[in-house]
Length: 156
Length: 252
Image (cartoon, rainbow over all chains, first blue to last red; front, top):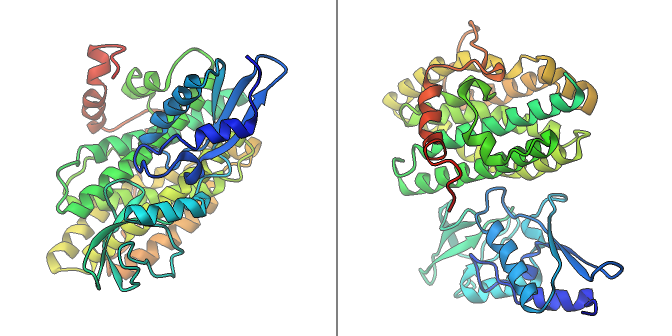
């Protein structure tokens, strides 16, 4: 088949969800570091991905989802490259990703000295219940105005 | 020892520290005194397993003998492991496991910080990834040490006893052997004497805030880095390796 463009690959990757927070795509999460298409050989595609946390159990699921998504589009030769440097941080989450997190009920990461806004009522009058939450990347918080508990995506 | 052999040996030491500490922490899953601590413990153990996997995979690549990360974890005998003696000490009570974790991670954070400048690019990248996790652990563990030390008479006395008991395993972290020297001289690796100074400064600060007493200078146990382990270690790896030893190659 004719080689596809990088832009096309990126478009397809926008449909690959993060398995733990499926409202985010892997592009929103900022873990797709590069896509290259080797036109000279066989139209082979290389996708470079960064792990979020060292032990993130989603890493392998994400890799197989990328393989499956591209295979479905007819790409025959796909390589996944793990890129460690520069390390992923929550700064890599896109603005669109932050918006999606908020809509989903998860407060997006903020710098340490800022208040965490409640994703339900936007109040800054919130408190931390537990530094550790349902997944390694989240902490448990509570809004002191609307009283709803919520997940906060930790700033890393 | 060739340059490549020294790098493999060093990477395996880092990996073994991460894996064996994770194994000790996994023994505590469902046994922590409160829910937040339960989550913290499992999350931290997961970080260490992730670090161990990256390091074992790298060692396997460097070795080029067809071994996998699982072979390193499950198919080596006790005397082939190179983790520090401190890491393998039994969990004991809650205070014991906090002190063990604190004394190690206070060292590990400086070791990783130095390794981010290592001339071996892969080691530097793994260190840059891991240090973010270890800083987070250290903040949490330091709080616990301070809370227990500056808590009730009972918690103070018990955590002081933990500190006194585990102190003799800290000296080994700072004793260089040929592997440490090779990494330092050839790859701009950590200078253990310099790290000892930073570690002591940090530990003294936290111990003072916890109103605890720094243990006196004493005889220090060593041997873990050379594969001579304490008697607890055999039981630990027997449990850790049971499945792969009995059902070799079993996978999910």
